[in-house]
Image (cartoon, rainbow, N blue to C red; front, side, top):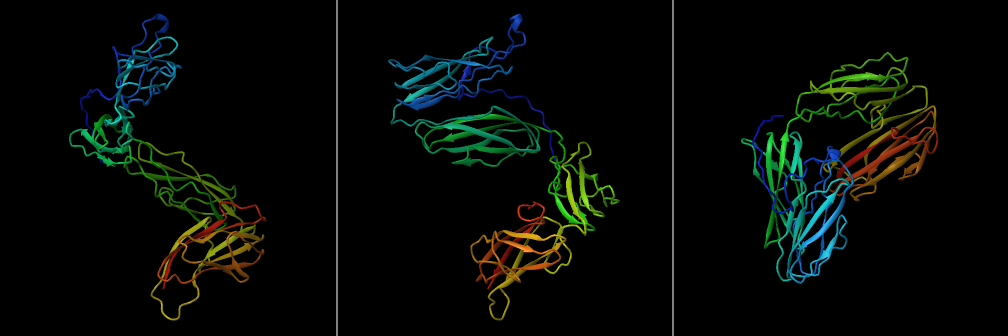
Length: 465
């Protein structure tokens, strides 16, 4: 990943749309000798609002902070109201009290919070009540004033808005300050429904993003600073989570090739066994490759892990890959697909795309899409078609056996020592494309013993004349 580092002066600014603390630093530790370790809480009374005369105003002190994580109490005051107003707070000690803006004009509400030992400085919020026929401009506040984000990711910015007239709002996001030679991008710049955007860049440093909200007649804006920094993080391992079912003597492929390093660094692989059957002498072939393999030389359970490293940090220990290997003579099901005589690893799923639009001759009643052969070793196979449908609703497919057609959710028993071929058929599609989804599940010990490993199926994307 190409990253530019940039150190820039810090820009100090005031957001005019929010309430302001009166006085100096509200986070100065108390000078009382008994409270030296207690920090003064910070009252935040919310954003300024414009409402209609007669509206109920909702105040919100939930953003108030106590860095010691002490429980805080709230005290609200209506410090200024328009002439002849009889407005009263619904509850002066509530977190989110209300009042009726009964007269045109400006209401000033003070909030003080208390942590049980010391009170915050006063924070004020202003509410302006206008006449019903007058357009009220929207209000907007980005939920955080300052974000810190590792440059390998995106910074998520979200705005809180209101409009007293319930007008449809348009959101315009833009970057108003950025480090020199940087190339930042916003995934959303203008929207009538999304209140958020994501900022990404290639250069460390501070970025100032502005959002402007408009109701078509008036607008309001707010800004936030995003500080991007660089930090190396471990690679992300993929491909080792799902259990595998196999039969003794099969080769087991392992695959972590979709693993990646969020920083874009080159990665290395090192595979190893966590556990394997005591009688096993198998080894992992090419253990330092992304896609090694090993021979399941005896029946039992194998657990394999991979360490993916960027040279500095690694994913180890990662989630293990588990392989359950059935004995050649013990109860198991062999599943073969189409004309391949070799059983597949389980669970098995594939997608086939089949075109029969250029064939000639009489139009058949059904086209054969593929076959599944199930061989029951030692025990009966209790088979069910858990899913069988055309998701495009174009045709009615058929799963045909020598003894009849299987339907979704039906139970079919294949006796031990026998094998059955199930043929998947589809009527002609008249040029339309179908998406036939098929899933088999089975048990070796009667009903109710189904396992996530004992599954096979796929999708047939089929088009015919």
